[in-house]
Image (spheres, helix red, strand yellow):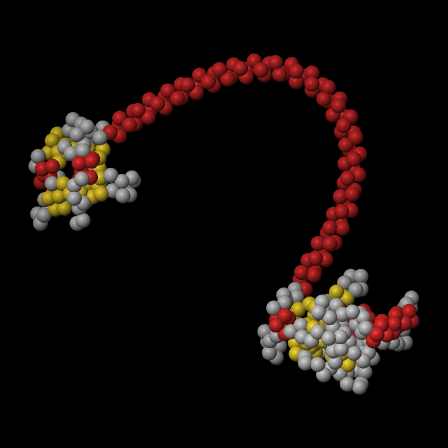
Length: 355
């Protein structure tokens, strides 16, 4: 995952201690305090900045590191809380620098480190604050150094993976926000001008409307009163009609299908299909149950009629078995009508039929 950065990536090293420094500091807050060596490094960096300030082309850049050397550098972590971390300290190899994130103003925002995995498989990239990294000499040669941070491998493995797509989204959002702000200012100016004109026209129109509204209000008041009376009367009529309809529906529901049908005494004329699903009426012609099944003998004669009693919409109902002699069946133009002499309470007291 190594990439060759543009020359602006050298800015990375301006924020780090120079390689000639004999030691680097590491604090618990990941932002080390300056030591005497650090002060010397800062002074050297300041001198380099002064030498290159205002120039366009350079023959050389003092106290700098090539981006191609920085990318691919191994990164180590140490748990030591000391101001004198050296290359001989106990360190864990935690990953490799894969890239550097530079903001639109040229500031280094983060260093990307590939961590975890094996031979590049299963690894992820995390973005680490540049201030968290220290350069530690790794020998007498100034080109030999290590990048070290305080922490452990577990902290990087649990850190969120860096998503470059989010950078592009944030940049697009910022650009859109600036454009919308500028457009908003233009709209505000136009709205301010329009508001003055609208206010004058509204005042003139308001006076005219006020006169017309006063006349219309009296007419509307009278018509509203008339309409209210008509609606109140219509509401009374609808309420009365609803009461009549409700009473008619209740009467129809409680009335057997064939009040004047012909009694059937020969049960050989009745089949299970005739009885299944039929309502069962009590002594006062009220519905007290419904036929749910019919038991027949070998000759298909009806021996028992199973009636569901109680419950609601078929739920929680109790099944009881009645014999033909406990039922009176009449047949008319609309089909069969089944009556029993027992009430619903009496049927519910009967033993439950289990089949």
